[in-house]
Every structure is written in structure tokens, then in C-alpha cells.
Image (tube, rainbow, N blue to C red; front, side, top):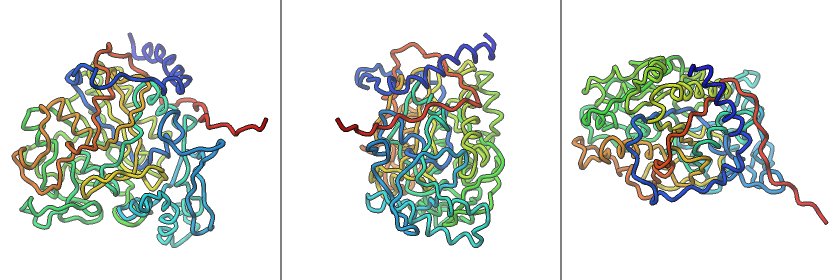
Length: 476
């Protein structure tokens, strides 16, 4: 069947997914204990990491999820704004371009505010000092703040369709309470650290704001990251991997600034969203060639040559990182997923889609405490696979550590990034994959079912339906 014919044949699935959100979200999946092991049916794991969205910002009104508390059709919570001296409720934001808020380690702790979850507007107002000229278009988010805005199927219909057809995770937390670079370090190594001696890995200690050694303006150098990352274990076990990068610019600021000049993102230069060239293990294993342009991902998906483990990283334009277009980012992610679904590897693939940090956007759930590093605020999480459960909402506590755990369980015989046993000692405080609070992604799969057909979606979808919020009570 041609690609066009496949596309048309699955448009009905798309429509059904959007229409059936409520019914599918109530689906009761069997317990993990009743499932066959089955994990090794997954031969290809793909982590797609987008940028800067909280769970409530994208799925806060998704039926059945732990979303924004509602009462009588509007948000039952509000956040104080020190400038207007009012308390602002979360609201529907129809905009394609958002501006978000500050999202450093300090902002994370202030937003959470000891569990009150009410610091979002306070931090935004504090960050306003970065705008010397209020007429600068880059300062729009200070005069028209949107950190309390939420989107639904009207703006992100494809993401809501994936949630209804596959699995939505409503307790996926950023692995640490900070910004993009530490989050991306955790994504590949389960740690973010700063090393005081560039020749001694045991000099590395927890650092969730300015990791590395010769750290300067968000840039690292070859060999900056001395501790062990997952690629080391993959190399030892002869498991193939690739880190697919969209080259261009990355807009994330590297300090307390909210407005900054975008940095350049290229394959061989360590940067905020591309830390692997800075890992000593990647250099020693001569695997820098595994960091490839995203065009190679599309080729591998088409040819059935995807590696066992893939990370797919955007550039600023397709990242959804404010002020990037949400529509453009969703189209890019859809193109990645469609490419896998149209290729011969679909029947043996699991795609994990998430967003690296909360971007300053409101979320109402208090992050759990895990060692000295986190977790950070909630981010959206989706599991897309022919073996994924149907319309299942996973309420387990998760973080990006769960991706590492699933990869290790599938390909490494459950070997962990563990300094006591992996052959490369470092001073990380815990083995994150074995934290008791961390859920197991295997619960998101039903390996007893026949592989499910793909859900091919248009890159430019029509808006979906508005969220169905609780109706006001009527007097009798």
C-alpha cells in the first residue's frame, strides 16, 4: 500500500480518536502483573524531547487526567499577581505563540513555594527587570503574561489524539528542578553535576544550575561531562544508538535571563540541547559519529534501519519553546511519528514523547522529593507504540529516569548506570532508575495484543473540540 493510501486509510482513526476522547480515557487496562513479560518485542526505543511545557499547559483539561481543579466550569485555583494585586485563574489560551516565564532552579523552587504552587506570576514579575524597553516585542510576555494559560484539542489536536489512541502520563516530572541543560543531562545520564577537577570524575558533585567544568554561557567543551552516561553501557553491550539533532538555533537562556540571544546548535559542538559531544565516554568510545542530523532519522525510519535507541532533539523553530509556534512544533513531531509508522520498524517500536521542563508555565501538582536533585515540575508524557494500551492514562510517578530504566530492562539485562557495578565509578548520590518512587513504563504496554495499526495524522490538522468542563449547577 502506498504512503498516500495508508494516510487516507488512517484518517478515520484520527477522527475516531478525537471524537472518542471521553470514552477512551475511561478505559481500564489490566494490571501489569497479569501481562506477559513481552518487553523484548520492542526492538527500537525512540525518545522525542520537545521543550518547555507543563502538564497543565497542554493537558490540564484532558478528560480523566489529574488536571487543573475545576468548579462550575472554571478553574477552582488562582495564582496571586503582585503587580495587579489580584489572584488570576488558569484560562484557555488560543494563541499559537506563547511566552512562558523564567525557569531556572530558583524559579522552580519559587513556583512550587513549599507546595502552594503559587509563585508563577511572582517570578514572572521579578524577571521583568530584563526588559529595559517595554516596547520591545520580546518583552510581550511581561505586559501580556500567559504562564497561566492552557491549551486543548483546539490548538494541539494531534497531541490529544495520540493521548486518546495510545497512553498519556499525567505524573511525568522533569527529573530535576531546573532548566533545559540539566534536564537533557538527566535524559542521557540520570545526573547533572559540576566537576571541579577536569581530570577526576570523583570531583563531580550535584549541580542543577551550572553543570560541567568549563561552563560558560550554556556551552560545554569536549570532555566536560566526566560521569557515566547511558551510551557507555550501550557501547559495552554492543547496542546501537543515535542522537538525532535538528541543527540551527536553540533559544534557551543559560541563566536568570528570560530574554537572550539564541545559541547555535551543531552536531559536533556540545550545547544546551546537545550535551553528548561533551561526554568523556562518547569521545573515548569514538561514537561522536552517532550524533547525526535529523534527516538521517527519516532515512532510517523509511529504510527500517533505526538503531535500538534513538533520541530526537529539535531546534528552536520546531521545539515549541516560547516563542516558537506550537503548530510548527506539533507538525514536526507528527512528521517524526508518521515516518516511523510508515516504515518497517513500526511493529517493534516504542516512542516516548515529552517536554524537557515546565518553561515557567503553571502546574498544580506538587513535585515529589527524590534525592538532592528533584523531581522538578510536571511535564506532558506520551507513549506511542503498536503495543501501547488504548486510551490509557498512566498515573504512576515518572521522570525521564523511567526512559533509561526501560532501555536498560529491554537491552541491557536491567544493568543500571550504577557507579558500584558499571565499571566507571562516580559520585552520584543515588541510582535514579532504582528509586522506589519511580514507576515502570512496562505498565503502559499490553504485549499480549497483536500490534496495533498506526495512527497517521495530518501535519496541518483542523482544530479539535473544546474541553468539556464541568457545567454550572442549576437551581430547581
